[in-house]
Image (cartoon, rainbow, N blue to C red; front, side):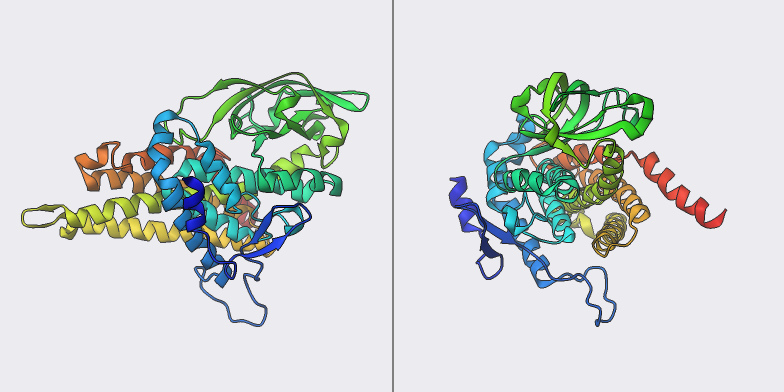
Length: 424
């Protein structure tokens, strides 16, 4: 049934051009390779997208509404991602958006990934964050820091069939990411890892894991190294968390007991893990901003039509000035978050510094998501408070935006440092 639904919404090959890779049976999708800014063009507004990016938005929106939408409540209630949704994401080419066609990916722009994350979050932020972590963290680390041999081996799997997980946080290492206690010891042509990880997204369903461990604690953060491991090497799921929101997205604690990883699976070189983590988390924050933006827009889109259908005192409640002004304020905040998010994405694409802009986008979008989703419940009244409409789920899902990939205070601290550098 899902396969039929997936095929029914598949865009024509003139929209998402197909390229056959070295691997058989794989139709690589390439959403956008057009430059975001043309050197001979006049400056444009931040909501101008290439034709391919706009087609991608429409395609992912249909996919989210038609394939993911009917499963959202069931997945949330069961606190489990439907395997068919994961399979459909791979079939739609959404799990290797920036990955080259040579490796079975779509060979698209970073902004294309941000668009996909936003559109998925309009329907289900749980599916969105799964796609986000897989694309902007796992794929990007291997694509930018892996050797050619590592890219050739792992990127096709990650683009076509195998979910990835990014393992950095630990019980004593949250905002202080480099206080991690997981240790790695060399043993011939292998490394032996011992330790634990917490709050690891995608870990229940994933088969490929990027694990950060310290190979030499005397060097402090300069001993941190990134390892690639597969679940069948002996990674243990110690606990699957029961959460307030994004409940279909798995969040687990992991245990490593003498986990043997081949030396060839070190990503980026020994002692380079801290550099990889810093770079990738800055990029990942734009992805979380997109998720929160899509979430807020989804809540707005569900609640506002109801306020025009619901009448009190002889007219739609949306036409009362108090309600109308609240919705106008929410629309302004949504647009501001959108501009911050896409500005950060374009700067990243252009190779310009984007750390401050990413922090601003992540902070603003997470705040807007909480305010708009909370207001959406109130606009719908008692109906909004029930689980049947799905509006209350957006509010539950929104809270995580102020916590993961850098808390709101960490974002403010980052922004403050830029101000201090500029004016002190």
